[in-house]
Amino acid sequence: MLNSKLKYSLLAAVALIAGSAGTAQASYCSDGKTVTFAGIDWESGAFITEVMKEILAKGYDCKVDSIPGNSVTLEQATANNDVQIFAEEWIGRSDVWNKASAAGQVKSVGKTFVGAAEGWFVPEYLVKGDAEKGIEAKAPDLKSVEQLTDPKIVELFLDPEEPTKGRFLNCPSGWTCEGVNTAKLAAYKLGENYVNFRPGTGTALDAAIASAYLQGEPMLFYYWSPTAIMGKYKLIQLEEPAYNDACWKELTSADGKRDAGCAFPSVEVAYGVNSTFAGEAPDIMEILEKATFPLEEVNASLAYMTDQKVDAVAAAKNFLQTKADIWGGWVSADAKARIEAAVK
Image (cartoon, rainbow, N blue to C red; front, side, top):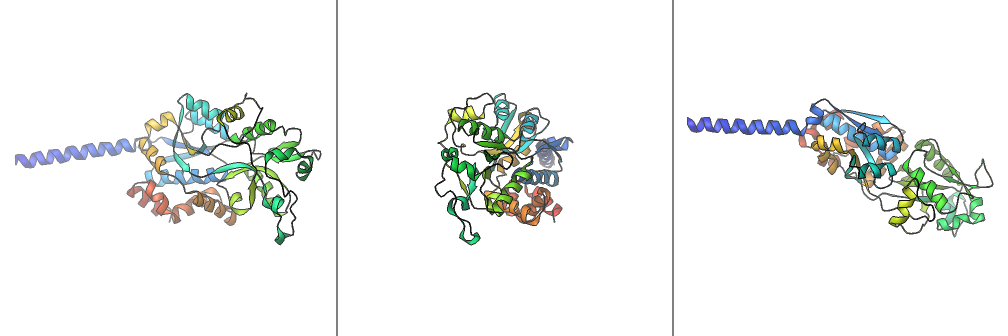
């Protein structure tokens, strides 16, 4: 009898400890707090944000939300803990993020995806032509940004509103890349040759690229991967001077020197999270550590959005419905079952 009582007590203690551990693991969401995501407005960021929102909401009963804004504003909101998760933070690219990280307000967790790239591009037909479309190569020797000051090259990209200059298609104002590209234009001494054109939104940027490409027109623009644009069109990235830390520090600092430009550094993309939140939600941090999207799957989902004319919410649902072999490894078995049931 004594052994039975002892056995029962031990089992009860183990159950109590296990129950307490389970409660602690899900404490952030079980306490009724909302996990607020940065409402990123570029395609890959919007898609990944919606996938992660669904995983937390459907798999772990979390209250989730997102707030819109440009990247700089949302990075500051993450530092202030008004936003908890910035799902596609390009580490080291933002003065705001760098300062918040140095102050211990934010941290990077996991790898959102691996193998991304960014730079300045022109259509392949501009350099190689396109026999099928009857397009002749207008700049067969164009390889690098150094050649962009050549008057003959400038003429290829004439700005319709200021035809004495070429047009460089930058990121929308407020995006981190817009500031870096503006700094590069100055560093490469291109300010007198090109209009620094900033479209109003990411959608407008894509529309401008697609329109020019489909008409076989020359264009000079910044872009990055993963994106549907990079998957749909043949583009050539222009060469830049090799990356170095000193150059990049100047380009990414608001008051940095603009004496010389250089290539973008190798890309590190992570989940940017508020540091206080990271300490309060170790279970969510564990999910983010595992949640690395294969780059080809991101491109495929973005192409799905474009081809099917659907938004990030629909693309996220499609991903969760069809790619459980990928995301299933990020979550517990119970959460996986709940998510699969919810997205049928």
